[in-house]
Image (cartoon, rainbow, N blue to C red; front, side, top):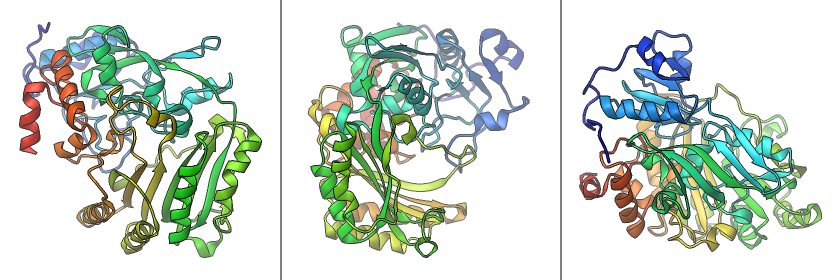
Length: 476
């Protein structure tokens, strides 16, 4: 199947063609260190990542993708695949290798009658949602508009519609994938079904998805927005209880954090611990108001910005120059009672980070009604996802903040419940195994061997090909 002389151990099997030669190979833009905009093009969302690729190719079409994948295979240069650039581990950029930048591939074809959409992989969640929202339609992505739909979808996709319409991968109908041999393959439940199973949760390990076919749902007006409450053990535990009891139409994200100096918060609250929640009810307005009422009654709100709105409005505008440096951990837990809430408050109070936060996402609903074996996302019945993070400025303080998140995560640990691959940083192979437990890992490794036996697509939360999988696990 493979004719390339690819080596995973070196970036110098052959010399990379000159920038002039590269420009003759691709329809898209080629950017090297001597070109204007190079520094901007190599910058990813998270701060503290300073890598200098030999070349960045902003591919224009699937043909460009195929040629660049083949070139990486031939030369042995490390290949990074970048969509929105939000990988916490900085996987969207490489040191000395080549970046396949999908950000120029933004074609979106919406079939309103059939409620489906073909979306190129360079689109962001916000761009797709705004375009679909013009027809009163939506696909559930994450909670941040600037995140690329590619990486988000490939890892699973947990967002504002997760309880009503499931994970993003539960709405994926088909995909077009350039595999490691440079071929463009169509995949769905009937065609290349093993590949279709793997790309629904297995990350970017199996190729470069150039287009996704999604189902769309009627989501015109939602009741949603921000609700800020005092952070007490009673409020935190009761919030989770209410979120678990809420109808599937309501998805929530609760952030227990130090209050930033937001203009709509009283000055005396700034710097104090609050519960900042985002709520979205995807259904009839009156029913949404009733579903949200229990949350408003938990305490006197410090700010209540919940109102009926077009669904795309929930994706707030973001500062383009914001590049946070953070130490973070993600996990699943079974419950958040008052004792757990007190643990959260104690650890947040002990942090000296510029911002310390614990994010609590109640799951369930539609995502839990899909079999754990149906896709590569194995954590279907996980009740609650928890993320803890310390955002800081002084990089010399990294060891202290990493120690804090490690101790915090240990204190919150309830069982070996795994982790969500899209929230993993550079945490090692053992943590990747936690994202893909048991039989899921074994099946993914076997599929990896078929489509990428030499691990060309390794700059990700990596699943080595079958025979290398156990060695990588033991070495970590």
